[in-house]
Image (cartoon, rainbow, N blue to C red; front, top):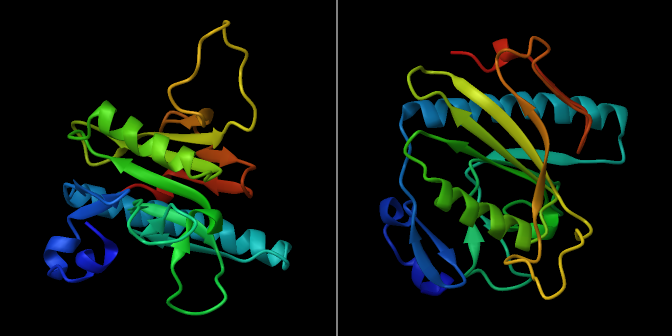
Length: 203
């Protein structure tokens, strides 16, 4: 399917799919907790981004939810819609967000999400060169976040045995992991200083 064909779909149907190099991929809507914790994480990160921008006026970031990120350098038939993201301020309103504009993407994982699905999404973000990828895993038996993980895009390649080639040329490495047992909350200095108390994420 092309982007032009995608735009002709009814809105309720279009919200359920993404285009991966022109291939239709169905996206299952998560439970109410998925939406709630997506917004809470977005709001917490936005607060940190605003603080960073006030200290570094030369930077300008926007924090959004469920916004299409076009992965190719041109065209619109290859995109992902992360649950939350940070992208640079664009030159004009209503401008498309592309991978080079994007600093961080995040996914909120409900118990129904499969590991293979998440690895496929992660590899697409990595292949597009997005520097940071976050995963927020929801608790299975409670309305709460179980763990937050931050991954950074690998800038070099590990040495592999002769003749062995990685399945994906780009890869994320875990740079941080936090659970509610961490009393200091989520703390990391990159891509800008982020400090989130668990009380900001609770319901």
